Image (cartoon, rainbow, N blue to C red; front, side, top):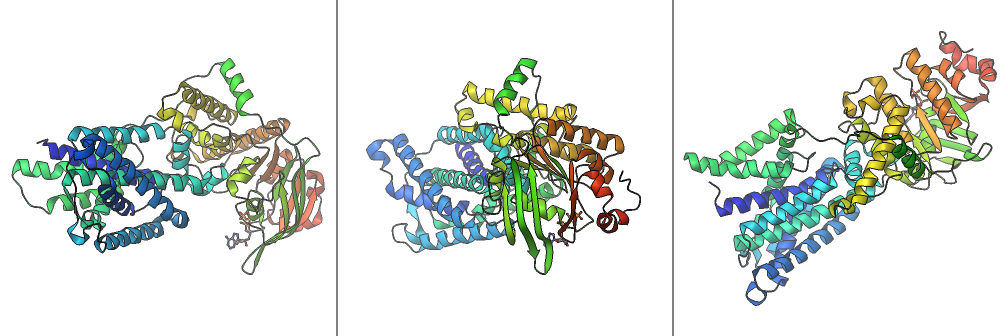
Length: 562
Ligand SMILES: Nc1ncnc2c1ncn2[C@@H]1O[C@H](COP(=O)(O)OP(=O)(O)OP(=O)(O)O)[C@@H](O)[C@H]1O
């Protein structure tokens, strides 16, 4: 059953599927890979020296280098303008690119037009499998690296990934370029195996085949494309072995499988294999102390030093003044409560402070930066970290992995060192895991380290968001309704945690509807109503302010404000 060509086709299909996997891990749907493969195949076939002159293997290696460079360069050129596109828009743009390449190649003389080009057959099954092993190795090492986790975080929740300090644009582009290089690799191997390459080899059907293989295999584990390719390439072989020659069976089965996988097995075949999640086996006291001294090195603004300075800040959404003329000065170590009725503009204000929303008037300085003028990940790097009103956890990652993504800014890049198996990479990963476990411990979630975020209770999810936000060692921590869904005991524990964080030197901005908790926890309270600050003061001053009672507390009669 395993003829030589079956073995080669399995390897080629898997390599092509890896070029889809490369971007699917980051949540991008691209169909341009057939175009990259086509450009690479034709360019390498015409530029590489003849195997007769230099020998089979050297000719193939030179062709591979050319093909991967062409694929990567094409992906870079296409990626720069299209990386802002999401989902189906990116798919359409990249598909249009592949189609343009196909038409170009059909109409060029040097490519042989629609007839195609003859290429010497030099690819042996062992070569294809060695290349596949190298590609699979790349993704195996990528998975649990800082880079790999960042890509997964982008796939799970792009906005939260930005807020954790991940430069989403660069990560997405690098994943796309890797996809281009691997598609180029596939194009070259294909060309040097099938003898005659034609533009149609890299048409729409090929792109869909690669995508289906990657999706059926699974895009959340590196073994996925290999499983998908093995499975789908074997279908015609099995058919032949049992004597059924109908050509429609394979595409039919592939489509059916795609449907079943999308409906019932979103993680693909690979999700049937238990995933080894990042877990912390143990951490000795001395190891923890060493980690703390290394990863938590930020010098927080001292008491009295400016952390946030807003002057006349405003934000309009069309005719709605979500915020208007906000003046707010926050200094080091303060715990500021931000309260106000629903729709008062609290979330909009913290979105502007953390760089997620741009102001339409006024000025803002946050830890020395204007958050409206720099990318969100730079605001995070300056020391701003936050939780979200509606949970924005990375659902398919474990609690520990979520926090490790939160520690993106304090951890060191490990992917390239993991490829070379350097012990320092392992040490750095372990340091980050110990640091993250400390953050989990601080919010009382250490026993849940291996549980997927989506499987946690609502209260635990709120706490996990805080642990994740703490992992970047922030100077300004913004908590958007952290006590929502918590009972009194949990809210009290959260209040104690906020107090202890403030004693560590953090400045905290707390949005909360639980007014009792705000009164107890905060040193100063700012009250918003209709987008404007209507009062600022100590908890006592706020509780006795008639405008506040009228606007806010009066409307929530049951709240105990004293
Ligand atoms: N993206 C948006 N587009 C249009 N209007 C918006 C947008 N975001 C907020 N708003 C409007 O701005 C106002 C302030 O909303 P915001 O979410 O900041 O209030 P909030 O105080 O956080 O409310 P809640 O307590 O309900 O979360 C509301 O009128 C809201 O409808």
